Length: 70
Image 1 (tube, rainbow, N blue to C red):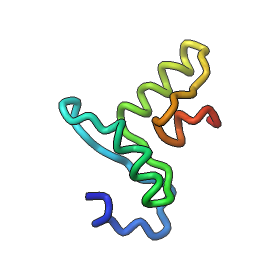
Image 2 (image 1 turned 60 degrees about the vertical axis):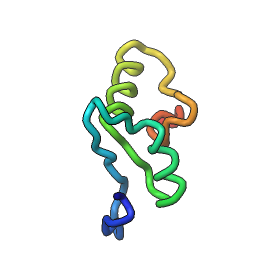
Image 3 (image 1 turned 30 degrees about the vertical axis):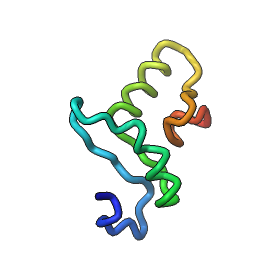
């Protein structure tokens, strides 16, 4: 569905999915195809949890936000 978006000038794509529809596997695929960072509630929640626990925010194959750069 992301291909239907007008992403011109966008900084990122939000992959919105409910809990019953896992989105994590699609994050790196959409990033690769679109050339934009992709976030989802799962990605953002994981990033915040790791940050608050003082742990490295690096999860392989989970997209730009969880690449360890932020």
